[in-house]
Length: 176
Image (cartoon, rainbow, N blue to C red; front, side, top):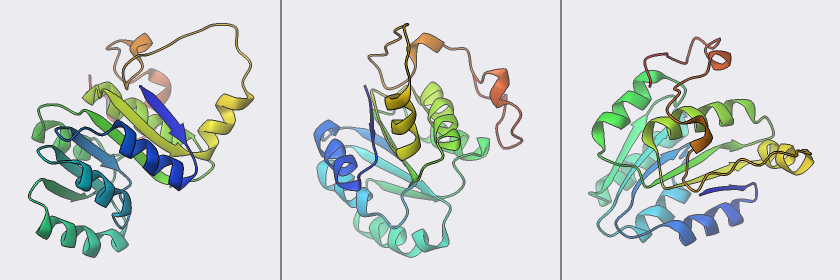
């Protein structure tokens, strides 16, 4: 299942609703860890890996790391193949992928990050906070129906990165 939201309260409520105590969660855009705290509170035997590249994240995330054995923080750019590869090698499964890259209006980077990470990790659920994606979906008129019951786009199968996305030097064709 894929859930979109923009309001932070709605996003965090979605987290509370989908999380199970044994989930392995990957959080992209952790910032100072307020949503990370919610995730960690829900997990008893699960694990959280949070990634953020902002300098403001380091101190609060280090603090969370000291008090939670099931928590790993990576100071890194979620657009880089090396970051995804590091996470993919460190977990056996991803149950929930949580994406909050500022929640702002521009959906292009958020969608590309979603596509690459979810195609690789194949999560059960994905939560995305981004106003632009919601505006796009709510404004679109379409006659075809594609649905995914998983947290990744099943209609794309295992195609890897489409050629249209490869124009970004940050993306890698190493991912399948």
